[in-house]
Length: 320
Figure (cartoon, rainbow, N blue to C red):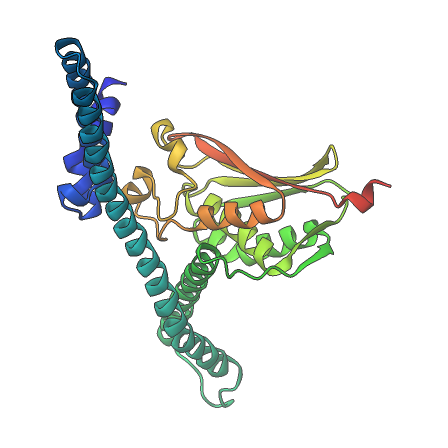
């Protein structure tokens, strides 16, 4: 606890992290403002005790106010600089994602043409098939990553478009599991599916909720150990559809639980097990579910696995 407190007041490290000089760094300026306020208040008290002239007291209070306003202007300037850098970063991610989508889509289309329209007498060797399979898999991973980055940029800029409609979530869960079976087989991970019959329909954006399902189930497979298992569940409780996905993989250390849904966050276990990804899947899932009126949470312990949940309310019209 004490080490976390010391880390919190280590403004020099925080200023370096943000790439700001001391007089541009809000952390340092807030400390300076606090010290100046305390010193001037104590000074004003002693001056008022020493001198009975009201003018001196008023002058000291005025000086205090001027100092606080001056430092406050530096704080505002530092915050504006950080905010501007964040805007530029989001715009950069958006532009780059747009530019990458076109060539990656072209590669995907070319691969599909090679697989489906090659001449009958043109046969690939096993080695060529392996190379083509690797290219296709890598391209799909890159295209998904770029698409997710583009969606994050749209959400951050308030430009995300949601086309909500009523649908059966169980069908999308089955599609997502089916789409991840190849990845599961490569790691010898078994996926079991438990869907409660007769579930109510929910009102969501089909494409975006599919992103949520792919990210949550995909993470469970990715962070499972070879030969492990993943359990996917879907049920209805109190007019809410509850989704769960459990794995017995690497888990997340407790001290990092509060940061799991942060943008670009990756736990230490990620780097240790050399998993791919940039840490935006859970951030994206939380943002999408928030729009749906839903919520997402998890239980996890390092080396024992994780269980992620989300729930979405059933439309009010269905309560009749």
